[in-house]
Image 1 (cartoon, helix red, strand yellow):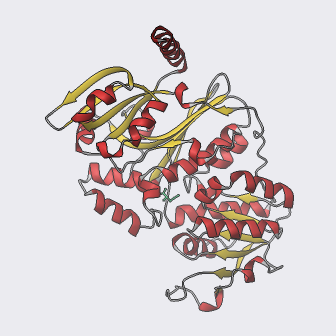
Image 2 (image 1 turned 45 degrees about the vertical axis):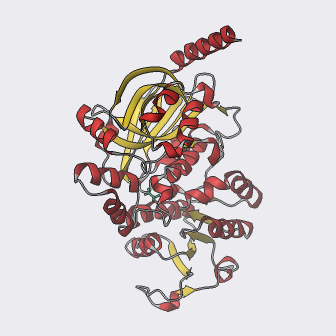
Length: 417
Ligand code: HSE
C-alpha cells in the first residue's frame, strides 16, 4: 500500500508538543515531518532551534506544502478556530483537545463532511489507550451495552497519592501539574469536566449519539473528605472517578461522571497512579478491559503519532453508528445507590429526596446517608453547595428495579393527587 507523506504544521510546543517532536525523531520509519511549529509565548526558552518556530498561525494554515495540522494547545477556543480554518483549507487535522471537540462536535462532523478531510483525535480520550478506534472499528454492531472507566489521569493520580501515600490533596495536585498531567485550569480535572468531555466523545463512537456537555451530569473529586475516605478504607473499597455510559434495551443512553466506591473484584480497583482503564461490555463478548497511561507527554504523543501514521493510509473515522434514533434517558429514569456526606442540619431535607435509605450515621456535626435516589433529585442536592456535601456512587440501579421504582413513584403521586 502506498503511504502518503505527511507534512505537519504543529500548533503548541508544551508538554505534548515537545513529546511529539521527540517521539517523531525516534520513529525514523514514519513518513511524517514537522515543517513548522506555531507557538504563542515569545519569552519561553525552547529545547530546539528558533528556526523551527513562528508566532503567525497563518504561516501554517495557509502553507500549501503543509497537508496536516496537529493541534496541541490548551486553549480550547483558540484550538477551535485553528481546527476549523485548517479543515476549511482542506488540511487533515489531529488534535488532543477533548474540550474543543466536545463543545463543537456537531460542527466538526459537518466540516469533515463538507471539506472531505479527516479529523482524528485518539489522544483526546485516555491518551495511550487506543479506545476510540476500537469503539469505532471493532464494536461496529448493536451489541455494545456499556462503556465504563477511569478516563482522567490527574484525578486518579491524586486519589492514589492521597490514599496510598498519605500526601495532602494540594501536594498531589501540585505533582500532577508538575508532571504535565493536569489541565491548565485543574478544576477541569478535579471537577469531572475533563472526564465528561472524554465520555461525550466515547458515547459518539460507542453508540453513535452526539450529546452536549450540559446533558451529562458530572461531579468530581474536589469535595471528597475524611469521612468517606475512612468509610472506603474500612470496607476495603477504593474511590475512583468513573465515567459511565450504557445503552438500555430500549435504545436510550444513561450516562454520568461520578466518584465511585470500587471493590477489589473490579479491574478498575487496580488502575492507579496516572493510569486509565476502560471496561466495555457487550452482549456476546461480555466484559473487556483496556488499560494504559492516561496523561503525560509521551503517552499522549504516542496516540498523536498513531493518528499521524493512520493519515499516511488515508484513515478517517466513518462514524458508522451516527444518526441512530437513540436518545439520552431523562434524569428521572436513572436511579443510583449513593453515599451522601452532609452537615446534619440538612439530614431531614436530604433524606426526603431518597427513595430508600439503607444506612445512616451522624455525629454532632456531620453524617452520611446511603440509599437509592433518582439522578434528578441527586442534581438538586449537588447544587446545595453551602451544605458541604459529598456524593459517591455505589452502583447504578438496574433497569428492572428502575421500572418498578418509577411505577411506585407514579402510584404515590396518584394517591397524593
Ligand atoms: N488532564 C488530563 C488528564 C490530560 O489528567 O487525564 C489527559 O487528557
